[in-house]
Length: 91
Image (cartoon, rainbow, N blue to C red; front, side):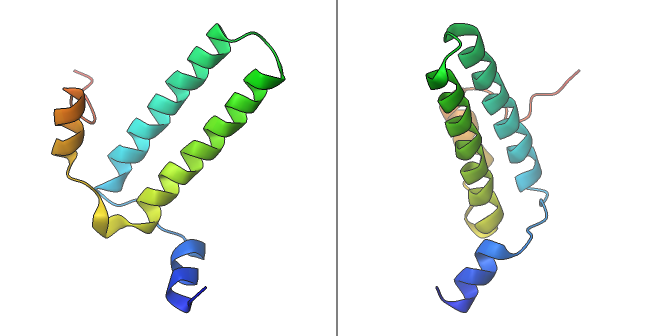
């Protein structure tokens, strides 16, 4: 692993103005999916593993935001694809 890749992986990356709402949305969606798994799947090893995989998936999604702040897709891409604002107003 080269020095710059090492730095990218193991250095703290503070949320930016662009990444902070993305973190919030990801957390909300992962939380929602976790609740769905808990409500729909029977209590079992498989349900626990699904929760663990969800944790890991969220970690990697957040790492993608942290480590690639210059490559974030425009918010409009999300809004076009899902037909809603990234961070809906709470009004």
